[in-house]
Length: 94
Image (cartoon, rainbow, N blue to C red; front, side, top):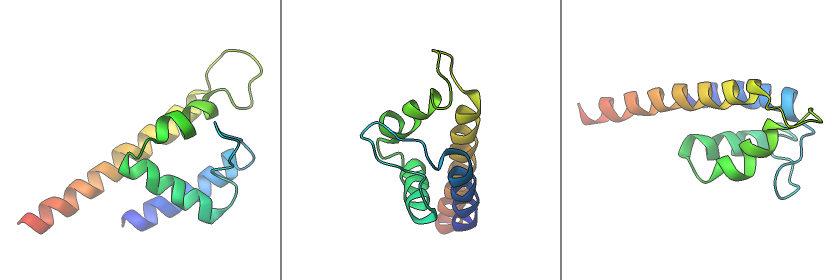
């Protein structure tokens, strides 16, 4: 189930942010494979906010305003992935 959720968000990420450069110039959503790895990094919480999410907030905007669709994208994925992971942990313990 987590793989399906990650694949769906990876496809959405490629569509929305495929050409967006991030902090170190890398294209984290350039293709499906890099997008899957990025979403796995987000699900595990492995220092993704500084290098992946923050540069995307100002992507496609020339001014200092923040793109709230990026926040909705990452927060919804983090909440859904966290719920799935928590259910797996509870199922293993019981």
